[in-house]
Amino acid sequence: MLHEPPRTQGDLNFSLAGIPVRIHPLFWVVGLLLGLRGTEGNPKMVLVWMLSVLFSILAHEMGHALAAKYYGFQPWITLHGFGGLASYNGEHLESRKRIAISFAGPAAGFLVAAIIVVVLVVTGHLASLSLSFHPVTHEPYMPIQVTPSGSYHWAPLDAFIIYMLYINIFWGLINLFPVQPLDGGQITREFLIERDPYGGMRKSLIVSIAASVGLVLFALVNQDTFLAIMFGYLGYSSYATLQSMGGHGNPW
Image (cartoon, rainbow, N blue to C red; front, side):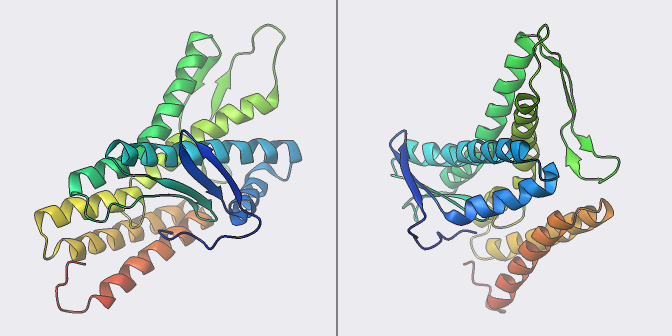
């Protein structure tokens, strides 16, 4: 998840705000599979979902990239099968700046969600908004009541708003859990290493494993298989990294 996939002939390349962006074919494949899972295969809604995922993840990675650019680095963005990655050549960047760059991604998503909510409120189209769990599937979802203007009401637009809020708020919150290599895990790692250069990395991995186990149990109770598999894999990765460090206390 922290490494760029190899370039392919199917890559889509463009530039946004002077930042190179590459979209790997697997980004579309995984997004489509998730869309089919959540839209019951409705082609129109799948397309709306794909656009929501593209805009949301791109906004998230732009947050990282713009923060890196602010600190004087030339970033680039790669969207791939596991989401996205904003890269920059800043290996020796101090911890507080790394933390700021890591937090800038979720913050950008929260800003997008806030703008959408403000627009809905100002235009009188937002009746209610809450984040809860679906009574049938037990999966997290973003129920939102949109008040149509006169006789105007377009289901794809309502779905786009719901998906954008869901992705930018819920996925943003999930991304802040102290699980590596999510943003929250990277923030925790930098925070602990700054305070304990010798054992901080080991401590951050232990936190990552514990948080992963808790989230897997939470996902299983709520019958969310995808979330359980994802955090099970991330927890195992943290465990494997911890084991590879052996008993030498190497902070890296």
